[in-house]
Image (tube, rainbow, N blue to C red; front, side):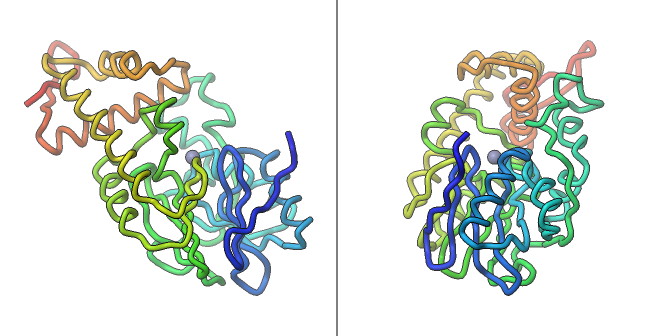
Length: 297
Ligand SMILES: [Zn+2]
């Protein structure tokens, strides 16, 4: 794969575009703050090289969250630079214990087919725990809470007005290709989208979409997709249905091809929607004849 290049977005802030966008921010004395480290050691190596060739030393990595495509380069960069790693407490647990993600998604000891780098980043040591809203240690970058996509995701606002929005906003291409974007807490995700729509920034950098100056349309498109999925699920529960059957229905309706990995990602997301819809009293849940059933209220 080609080398990564740093694009300057504002005075002290660059981005490196990849499958997962990263940020490079000059914000403290000891070197730059890297926001997310890509999906594996190879991505980490490219980010490190890009910074070194620009004469920038990585002092710390701030992870938006613990999904492997965001912290997969941590271990490589930390081994080479002894940089600090900064994350929220729950995300830190996942970053330091890679078995947690496939175990959580599967709901037990994970199948061998789930123990791979896309669900298990190489573990790295988190040196600083943050509780947003707060400043990132030794920098002028502000961490903001972005709950919803994963347990305790954070976004980062630089002093020159660039906001790194993590996995709150899927691009329209992703929404078209993989419409059921992974979600942990649907209510929190919707609230986060509302907060973001009102956020003032020069640039917004989603992890998986190009930087934009206008967050509104993307926030609306993502919200509309969540509501579309929720109403499909409610309709599909017109007669009692098991989560397993619902998952198959969602996959067929939204044309998602299921591998073992997609099965657990989609399954976890569908169960998150079910919990939200029960909480909202759109669905009820009971156990009958040994089956867990959901039905429209
Ligand atoms: Zn991601």
